[in-house]
Image (tube, rainbow, N blue to C red; front, side, top):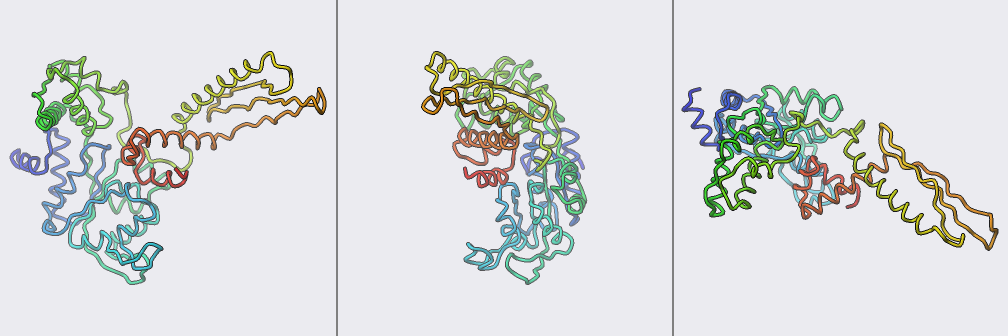
Length: 404
């Protein structure tokens, strides 16, 4: 493909950059568009995976047919089958009318399944059948329907790990992954970072009627050396912040550094690991739990001070202990003694020492994190899910599970 052809495609779909890795992805998308093969687009969150299904559709024989993009992670688990395959009237409680699913209304066109790794296992079985035979059933129906849809899927999960954890079917993975297009992370295309920042800054300055924004050489170098865990989405967010907040639009490295996370240069995974149902890494929750335990310990000390100098009838707290092990933080409950002089001056009731179950403490910490994320995001579930690094569907399920 010539440079002129690359330029025309990028201009049409709003893609900025000259990275060889980016160009390779575009080249594969154009080549595979002529076929009806299933395509899996992989890459970290925020790299711009959504552009490639549009390229595939536009350069295919289906370009005059419908194109639909479905975010599988944003649809609650209880309704995802209905959204994809449709349902009949009376199929479930709220099914007052029949409903056409995306596989029906996208017939003859292209269906983009974003965050396909978030699909429930039951839905994965249905999807596999459609991909292999072109047949599906509406919910509540026994009539087999046919569809002619080209599926393009995308994920930011480590699919191999998801398969090993039993969260994604291996046969479906190979059926989707006939051709894979890997979209490079922003740190893998450093030469494109100044171009992207300049484009975003120009757009925001024009939108907010601000003077043009420019970076000096040191700031440009810092921009390219940063890790960009959130990729293009993070870069765009920072460009907007600087455009609005900074009065001096001649940006140097010290100014730019204020907007970069402190851990920006730390290494991370290329693809997000799937949320496991068991064997989870509780390191973050343990940190939160430890702080909670230390606060409880402080409150306990204050209570003991309050009880000093008492008459003897009342509460006495002794023996508070904290134990931290490799699998979590455990607090051994203190011994609580209640004096009852009207029965016997020496007779006391001593509370049993109870070791809190780590699973219950982890659940409390998770509830607290969800509440805090929802509070910070003003109740916006999508923003809260991004802050918690989980899908919107997973957040919806947890909110329902915990009754929040």
